Image 1 (cartoon, helix red, strand yellow):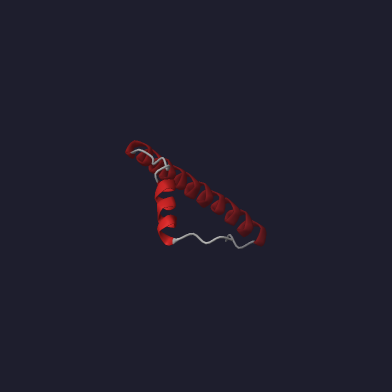
Image 2: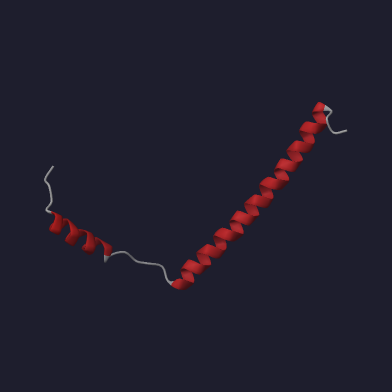
Length: 65
C-alpha cells in the first residue's frame, strides 16, 4: 500500500471535507425536536409495558397482596 505524504493527505482531507453538505439550522432544530419526541414516546411506552408485565408477574406469583 502506497504511503501518502502528510501535506498531500491534508490536501485530500480538505478537498473531501469541502464536499460535505451540512444541514441548515432549521433542519438541525427539527431533527433535534423529533429525537426528543421519539425518546419521550419510547420512554412512556416502555414504562407502561413494564408496569403491565410487572402486574402480570405479581399476579402469577401471588405477590400482589
